Image (tube, rainbow, N blue to C red; front, side):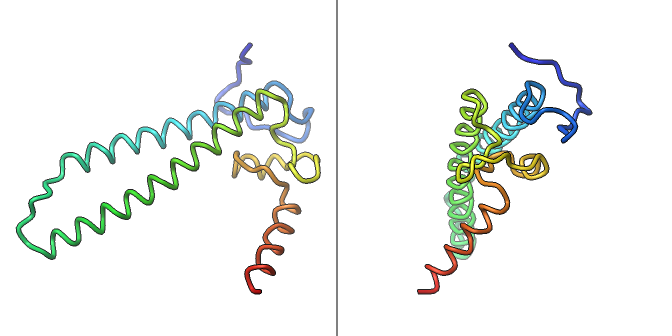
Length: 138
């Protein structure tokens, strides 16, 4: 049962956290982001298929190969991002979206709006990054 939300709707702290409107807002945001990534991926594949691999100049060929490798790395990162988007959509469905995986506390709406795949509150994310730095420096 989808809730109608207007184009200018933005979740606010004045309403109950993760109410139906907010969940629908974030579902739409995540689906639009996923669609953009998939569209870009299709365009990249088409461009790679249409490129002429038989460039006579070695420098041109090397440049093209470097561009392709970079493009494929970008696509791999985006494939992982799609998995995170799908996981966020599942959390919306099961009612856990918007809550910190570490503390169970609500993640701020501002953070979710900026990074809708967030699974940690800002505080928990900062603790996580500090721990990573400590262990990485060892």
